[in-house]
Length: 288
Image 1 (spheres, rainbow, N blue to C red):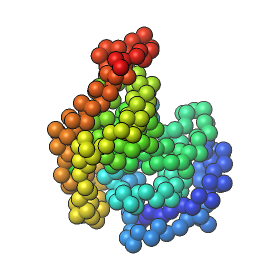
Image 2 (cartoon, helix red, strand yellow):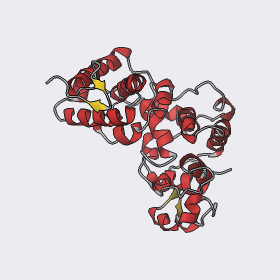
Image 3 (cartoon, one colour):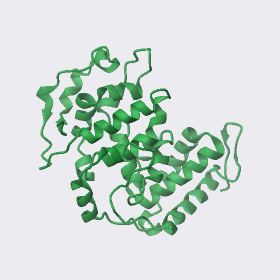
């Protein structure tokens, strides 16, 4: 049984161009592998089955199209608390030791032996190839429901533009952001540029707007998370077309998400992203 371990930052020196392009499939980093001190064994076989199923299912498609399918299932297969998932060493172990072929498949260029960026192996959570698949669903699931998480995984640059700002750990706000960006993508097809513009505007407004005064951020249900983490993972239930179920936490009330969405829509109007003011490849000035 393959189990979760950690990899220290010193291993970065071993990530040669040949390893990152795949002409050398593995690299010896045994001296940098460490125990994470979780006090429990985390079996990696369910995660291995999920990733293998995702690569097989989307093998004839652009690899990015696998993200909405894989994200919720990676989260459901790898049962971690947020505190555990915040340890970057585990993600670096997974990408470098256990799943380097997935990293190359997802971020390489088929047939061209592209040297995959080192950050996809040992970068921040927003860019690490597997950390992003876990953290985006964790932050955008609504209780046990991964519907918005799957949507979020299909929104380009959501992790890079939004995971770095204050609201990313305020669940009602991020759920509303997913809804807003989905609408923006459907209406304009320019969510990369305009979503980045909106993220900057939201971050600037958070200097004067208190998120918890807008809507409360529900506390984590420690009992539900503990039960979920300790529960047995049946990978056969994860690899079908239906979304899995996450931790049995109470969902955020619809009215709270709607309240934040109103704030986002109003801000979008002020900066020129709403009211039909996006046109001709330009972001025009909105009302003062």
